[in-house]
Image (cartoon, rainbow, N blue to C red; front, side, top):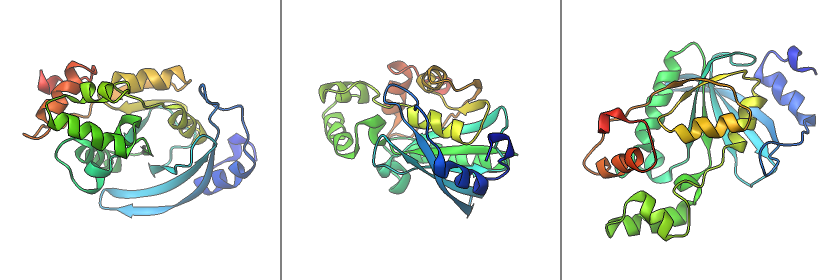
Length: 226
């Protein structure tokens, strides 16, 4: 099946059964769309798309609202997994608030995608994230804690996300983010980022220092915290 003939996610799943490529990024990541299904949610009607990749054993997903195949300027959110925030509602971060705000916004748009990436703790994993929390409890900020554990401020790689975008035949994206590293990371991997949609979340007493660290040390564009 040729790319121009693909009209639906179901057809894309069928076409990707034989997909092979040289891969994306330094690890030559190759992605296959393996399943898609309807997913009505409290944020609107979505389709959930499951992806296989040759790099890790993690199962990444996209939540698609409307028709995105072959479109330009598609609003997207790249959301990195946060068990403590997304599932438990931790107030130490703004992850769950960002997740819900993104889905609510995308659900009201004509089309859009939220990519759910299994990159817990900015890529250091759940166990190390909790170790970093312990150091933060002792007075370090998020950047200092990651460095103390032997990691960079942000260990995330966007090769999988870039291929997921290409797999959905999206020609260009408007990225819902405050993080310029996400924009630069996608551009470096061949994604046409045509614009940015700010995602400003009010702070609370538990995450105010965390958010100010993201703005002050990690370069996040968060004018509300200036």
